[in-house]
Amino acid sequence: MSRKITVLLGSPRRNGNTETLAASFSDGASKAGYNISTLRIPGLKIGGCIDCRRCWMNNAHCFLNDDMKDIYAAIDDAEVITFVSPLYFYSWSAQIKSVWDRLLPYFSPKSKNDVRGRRAVLISAAADNDASCFDGLKKSFELACNFAGWKIAGEILIHGLHEAGAASKKQEYLETSFETGRNL
Ligand SMILES: Cc1cc2nc3c(=O)[nH]c(=O)nc-3n(C[C@H](O)[C@H](O)[C@H](O)COP(=O)(O)O)c2cc1C
Image (cartoon, rainbow, N blue to C red; front, side, top):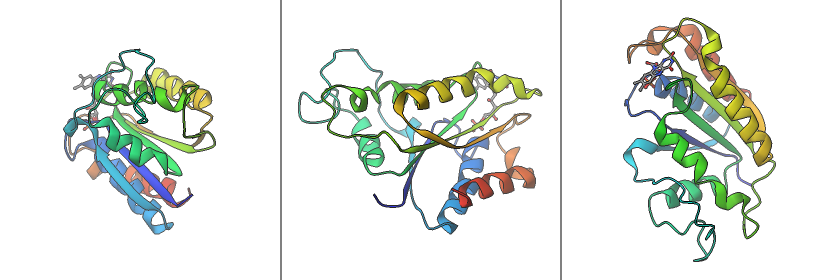
């Protein structure tokens, strides 16, 4: 498998805090020799899973024909999958949650891709002043990775970030993100 990282940006806020942290992470990963493929989910048309159980029926991952096909293509050969989401009501942004649900074809009995053994990274930012605000998101990520058979390669969870430019003023957070990418 190629040394490829797929970075899924889940914030509707362009150049916001999570995108800033993800950019430093990607800089570090690219220094470590990875090819980065970045997709901005809010710019794509991705519907929610409709539980039709027709995964792989058209010889494609999912029966729904929308921009999720770009995400499948980016995940198929990625060594590391990075989920980037602002904390919204103690959980994922709605945009990236749809992506999680649409990963079901990989775990269907008819799946043609075995994605077990991949690595996954979580990047999030929150306005709250207490790190415990991430408890729900962290648990969701960890349980989902356990279900998928993915090893967690990093969690960058930064609280106390509200305004869009807040992360870019915090050099230590940018360094943490860079180092997480470089040490993959
Ligand atoms: C709809 C919505 C829900 C939010 N829910 C939370 C929350 O539950 N806890 C929290 O600490 N911050 C919450 N926030 C604040 C964002 O997580 C915070 O501003 C974050 O830095 C945004 O990242 P971004 O700039 O990448 O979009 C919420 C913001 C929005 C717009």
